[in-house]
Length: 243
Image 1 (cartoon, rainbow, N blue to C red):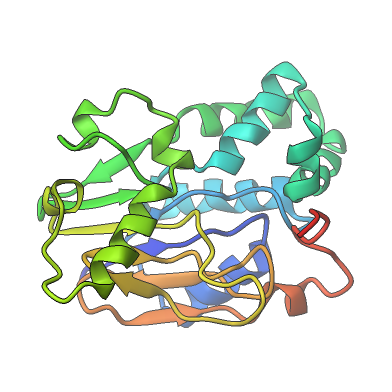
Image 2: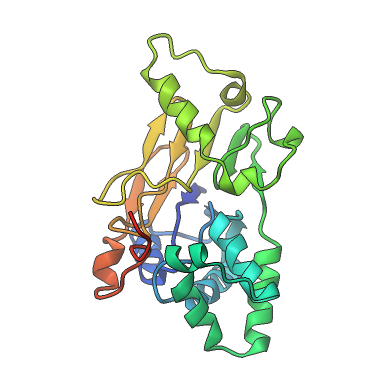
């Protein structure tokens, strides 16, 4: 049976991604929708993208753009390495890419340039990394960076979830369901994906002490890797950044 599987933030955690795909028993019939942030965190940055490229050749994959993927692209194409990026996982990514040749980098640059801002399926389900701000929906968004930087969509969904009537505001009402990553549900503990209103957050903190998560968007069954800090013992992940 064909499944649509949404995959949350990975943050260079190739070991976690391999583990969770195995636990989900992924087959060539499945549609894998990756919600972005493939990079910045653990030590296997270019190795993670290499693995994604092998998955693309074997499976039906959709790759959404995350903010950390855009930051990495800026480094690879313009040598931009701001301190805030380096402190939030960019240092490990920089070290990884500085160790490979230009031809290898060019393959990854092409991959990162071709990432999608969002995917809207035939069931009016929206998949994107972060959010959007235009009340008329993603097609009318004025600022494309909102697709991979916005945090207000998840904040709005959590506020709606706490109200008694749970009436969906215009932004949320446009779509049957919305699947995002970007804002970790927890940085300090191992957690499950979380729903608020009609929004599912699948960023379960893989950059910190959580695992990589795969969610079946139809059944809501999910699978998770071991905590990434256990798979990459001795590495800081994104914990270099001041709290």
